[in-house]
Amino acid sequence: MANYAESSLPEDYVLWGPANFIYYPEKGGESPIQLPLSAVILDHNGLTNILAGANGNPRPGRGNIQDISYKDILVISQPSPEACVHIYDGDIIEHSVFETSDILIVVSKSNITNVLIEDDIHTPQDIIFGTQPKHTWCYYYQKASLARQGGDWEAVIDFYNAAAEQDLHPNDQIELMPFLQAFAYSGEKKKVKQLSTRINTETYYQYQACQVLSEMGEHGYPLSVEMETHIEKLFCKKKQP
Image (cartoon, rainbow, N blue to C red; front, side, top):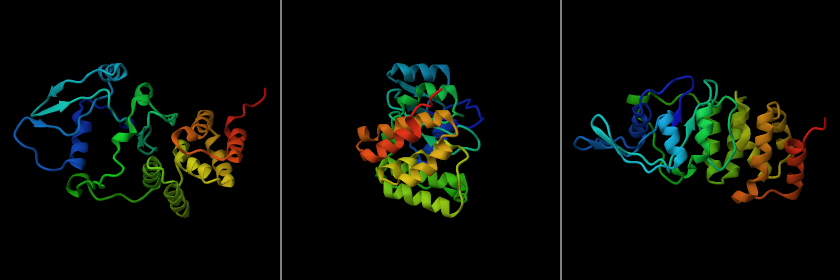
């Protein structure tokens, strides 16, 4: 399930078409073709089936068949035209303030393990997608998000430094979260403090930073006691009236 910034998705082929061209570009067999990757659009039927964990049935299309699995989805969204593409992990609270309410309804159902971090990289075909664009902030953010999924915190920091060297910054401050986690896990209190001044400009992001950092130990990446105290003061301590 995906959301394109400020663009409606009238048909599911707008999603599964590009995805299959990227990951399964080989020519299909006889019609109807069994699609390797299927998709669900952001409508009432799709939302309710995902929330209910409905059992999917083969869905015939125009020369193709999809096997829909409502219990095993990946939620992808570009919350605004200025934001990067966000691939959601249902176990982590990391939502843009620009995100649509429909995405927020199902984001907890997103299974991040559907992103196969050990698989080979699939480069989109130039003839269909054009040449690779210039590496802007989103390139480094999305690379860092992938490295975070594999627990490679050193790589996350390397991507941050590479972006900083080029004076690249996010338009949506929630995209600092992978880097904030990496610096916290590495014990870099100064860097955590620096990022807090940008994240805490949005109350919802400050709340999320508190939650995400406080739960890192539950995901196998415990922070030092000193860093936990530092985080509590920066993100979690409620202001007195």
